Length: 236
View 1 (tube, rainbow, N blue to C red):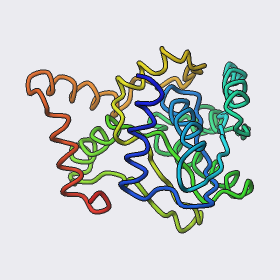
View 2: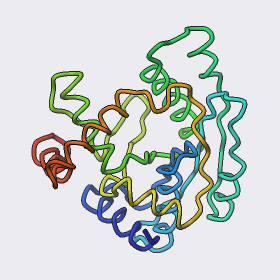
View 3: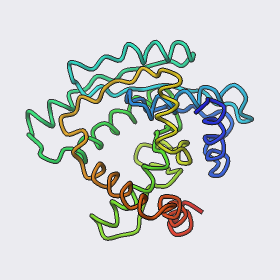
């Protein structure tokens, strides 16, 4: 996928859900994965000509893994002219050494979000952008059905009153396979996820389930996304 096509998908989501207003200062969550780097690349490109002028801050919450190397991410941010901040934490130690969590994902997400929000506010940001894409949307909805018994999904735009910051998700129209293509085409400096439970989560199970169902029922993914847009508050 070329940058122009990526920005087209991103701008459509931003326009459809009025994600960006004049003067916004947006903190981009950069984990070092392909999704967050793609989001950073797209928003950096849009920043040059989008009608509503906005500023960007790139933030990485380092969970404390010793092997994590974000030097490539720092170099990319420099090339894109986006200030880059790494927030150092002991989250990995808390999860796996002190608490010895068997199912750490929920607590991990809570701790990472807290650290991220504090730094975003310190940097003067009124919004933050996460790199949830098309596949994340339908996977989250199906996980809610399977494990919670409810038809639910995160919203494209969410105001977080406790943190006093608005969360936007500009990649909701972008397929993961398109992001993989973009990563390869633009040689993104992806940082391997060092988490020991990576690839063994409920989300990974759900991802494979959707892949299998879509193979036997072509167009299933698109129909699931349509159901979300039509049936879940915050998506119309």
